[in-house]
Picture 1 (tube, helix red, strand yellow):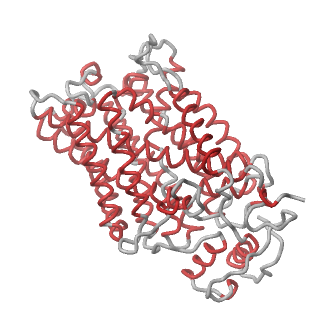
Picture 2: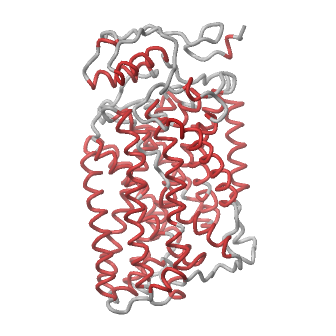
Length: 552
C-alpha cells in the first residue's frame, strides 16, 4: 500500500484515480450543453475554477502569440551575429531547421494543450504524466525553469530595445555617448510601461494585440519594399546571397558555423508557449489552443524568409555592419539600403514599436504562468502570486513581481553587460527545456492511457514527435554551450553550461528547503474530465465513473 504522503490529490489508498464530487452549484457536467459552461466545467474537472474572463478570440490570441515570437523582429535584432557566423547563406537557410525544430516541439505541446488546456501548461502536464513519487518535484522544476526562462527572455528583449532607442539617438546625434546608466533608465521605463499596459489595459489586450499584429505585418511590408525601392538597382548577386558562407567569427568549420546560425535563428521562434498560458481566457480551448501554438511558427517562417532575403540583397558593406558606429547592425543595414537618415530613423522607430509589443505580450504570458503554478502553492508566497485583481481582472501581483525582478536584474548590465547576457542566453535552454520535459516523460509511459481524447491528436505519430523533440533539445543544449567566436578567450567564452548548472542547483535547493512536502501538485478529476470529453467529441453519453483514459 502506498503511503499517504506519496499519493496525488484524487487518488485513493491504492493509488487509483477517484472521482471528486463537485461542490459547485453548476448542473451535472453531462447536462451542460452551452460551450462556455462546458469550458468552465472541464476546467473544474482539471482542478480549477475560472477566475478571468474568456475575452480572447482565436485571432487576438494568435496575435498575442505572434507578438511574443515575432520572428522577423528576432531575426533582424540578431542579424549581426548571423552574418558573422554564416554570412548570407547561413543566415537565410538555417531559418528552416530552426522553424522545423520549434514546429516539431510545438506539435507535441499542441497535443498536450488539447488534452489538458490549463494555464499551467508544461508544469501541469509534467505533474499529470509523471509517476506519483516524482510528480511534484518534476512539476516544480518545470514551473521554475519555465517562468525563469520567460523572465530572462523578457529582460533580454527589454535590454535590446533600450539599446536600440539609444542607438537611434546616437545615429541622429553622433556626438552622443551611450552610458550604461542611460541604457538602464530606458530599460526600466520599458518594463514599467509594459507592466502598466498589462494592468490598466488588461481588458483591452485583445484589441491591442490585434492592432499590433496588423501593425507588425504592415511594418514588415513597408520596410521590405522601402529597402528594395531605395537600393534599386544596386542589389547583390543572387549567387552571393544564397551561396556565400564566409565565416567572420574565427571558426574554420562551416558545419559548426551553421550550427551557431541555427541557434541564432532559433531566437526568433521562441515563445510558442504563450498561447498555452492563455488557454483559460479563450473559448473552446481544446480546439483553439493548438492553433495559436502552431500558426505563429508558420506565419513566422513565411514572413521572415522574404525579409531575410531582402536584407542580404541590399547589404553594401558587411564590415561596416558588423562594426556599426551605433553598435546596432540593423541601423547600419537600413542606412546602407535607404541612404537616408530620416527613412532609417522612421523604420527603426516602427521596428521598436513592434519589439515593444513583444515585451507587453511576454509580461502577459509570464504573469499567467506564475499565477497558474501559484494556485497549487508551487512557489514561496504563492498566496500573493495567485491573486486576481478584482479591479483589473488579471494577476496584478504576478505582473509586479516580474517587473521588479527584471528591474533589479537589469542592474547587472550597469556593471557588466557580459554578465547580463550570460544569464539571458540561458533562457533558450530553460524555455525549450520546459517545452520538452512533459514530452520526454511521455516516452516512458503509456500515452494512450494517460492522455484523454482530444480534438488535436498526433495519433500514431505522437511517439515519434515526442522522441524527436527530446533528442533535438538535448543537441540544442549542447549547441547553446558552444563558444561563438575563435580564438576562445575568457571574454568570449560561452558560460551557458555553468550558468544553467548553477540555476538548476538553486532550483533543487529551493525544492529541498521550501517546497518539498508543501507542493503536492494540482488536483484533477480525471474520470469526469474523460467522461465529458468523450461525450463532447463522440456525441454520446458515457458514465462519469467509467475507468479512463482511452484515446483514439
